[in-house]
Amino acid sequence: MSSLSGFGGAIPHHRPASMTALALLADSRFPSGGHAHSGSAEEAVSQGWITGVADLERFLLLRMSTSGAVAAGLAAAAAIWAGATGATGATGATGATEEHDPIDRMAACRVPGWLDCEADARMAAPASRAASRTQGRLLLHTARRVWPRSRALEVLDRGAFGVPSTPSSPVRPDGGATGAGALGAGGRLSRSAPHHSLVLGAAAAAAGSDGHGAAVAALYGAVGAAATAALRLLGLDPMAVTSCLAALCTEIDAAAAAAVASATMAIERSDGSILPSHGSIELDLASQRHARKEMKLFAS
Amino acid sequence: MRPDQERRNTVEAAASLRSRPLRIGIGGPVGSGKTALVASLCREMSAAVSLGVVTNDIYTTEDADFLTRAGVLQPNRIVAVETGCCPHTAIRDDIVANLDALAMLEGSHPDLQLELVESGGDNLTATFSRGLVDLQIFVVDVAGGDKVPRKGGPGVTTSDLLVINKVDLAQMVGADLGVMERDAKQLRGPLPVVMCSLVDDPGAAAVREWVERQLCLDHRTDRELP
Ligand SMILES: Nc1nc2c(ncn2[C@@H]2O[C@H](COP(=O)(O)OP(=O)(O)OP(=O)(O)O)[C@@H](O)[C@H]2O)c(=O)[nH]1
Ligand SMILES: [Mg+2]
Image (cartoon, rainbow over all chains, first blue to last red; front, side, top):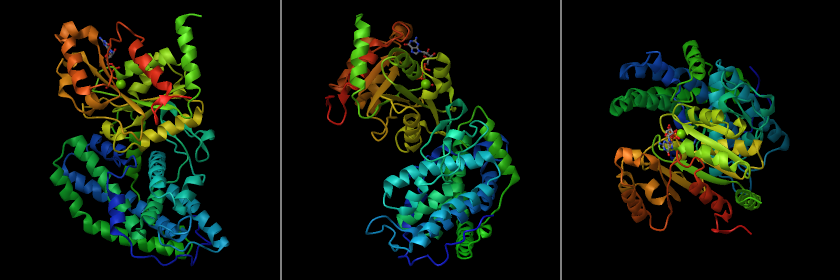
């Protein structure tokens, strides 16, 4: 795992995190292309892992404690970084201090690159990495329009990140930098972008939320996408599905608290290996299988 | 010069004055002929105008594959957007994937003048966001019965052009074309309606002429391009 060195002590004081900002970000109506992704629920349905609400509950718990927890740690770290990075111009939307020591700022600019590598290392399936980058690019598109003065979002937009590579859209050498485009086989998109969790963290900070808000949004997004997809694919009772999500609230809160604790420590100690790194080989395989399918309703 | 060559030159000259590509959405119920219409427009116009197409399919790349196979446009000018179970969300409420696809097309083809965005087949209420397209064409077909225009919905009532397609099938399904045209015009006021058969007129002349006319206008001011 790479290190977050050079970023100690630059975390400024915040005003209290806005709960409304969290509601805005966690709302599935926030335009970020998320509706096209099922969080592997489509493949789980086709494998017969999810046939009804009882299976769905188990699946959501698995999602929450693996990819959800990983995304939450990364999002929290990104939000802490973004909170310290502030906004462009005289009055920052985040209320963070505007002027930093230039050396600190240079170090701060390297943080998203490190976090992005940490994200890559935690997603074994190329299809999961690709879906995460695609969703990162789309969320960034909206977030840049909504919070044009966020310095962190600007850094994510300008930086060079990896190119999604899936079985259906192989890596193209011409897609290396942000802004450069490449069409994969079958006209599917593949283009450089930071991972979704990083953008989510930066957007949370820009909205006025904090690391905890970013972690909750990541966890809720991870289970919410899968729950909605299962509801649509199986025609489940929406009240029963919502009950499933309601039953997860305490566990999501606990997972978010754990994610924030490790993100804070990771940044303080300049050590990315502290971030959550849970995974499931079954989910990784499912993600790969889904990407190879010709007939599917959801992108991932 | 032959008249169609002359026409092509006029469109080519007008399109070259555009500061950015014109974005036209093509929506309408399942199977009404959206892809067939896109194919016609590409076939007829791609010699004079730099064109790109974005498709929004339910099952990934069906329409994009059709257009590629039909050979009406270079494959790298066609992009498929995946829409989950919600094709109308991708064109109205959450348009980022489509905006991204358009940005990518413009990145690889900086000379683009016309962008056609085909929605997945959906219901009569599915319309495009003005944040995604400048203009929209709504395609319904005769085979669904002559009641369709009367049922209304924002696609029928507010689209910039309503195409009533497959008029060649009217007799077979007992649809009264006069009723359809009258109902549509009543609901739409001054907005144009075109009766069309892509079987009898594979070039979709009336629709093509409308698109060519729009290419010569500035849609922020509704004036002729200078
Ligand atoms: N008879 C007749 N058939 C037509 C006409 N236009 C299209 N079709 C046929 O109608 C069928 C559906 O056409 P498409 O162009 O695929 O329709 P679509 O609206 O793109 O369909 P979706 O994308 O699935 O919603 C095809 O078999 C076309 O050949 C027409 O004017 N007359
Ligand atoms: Mg079609």
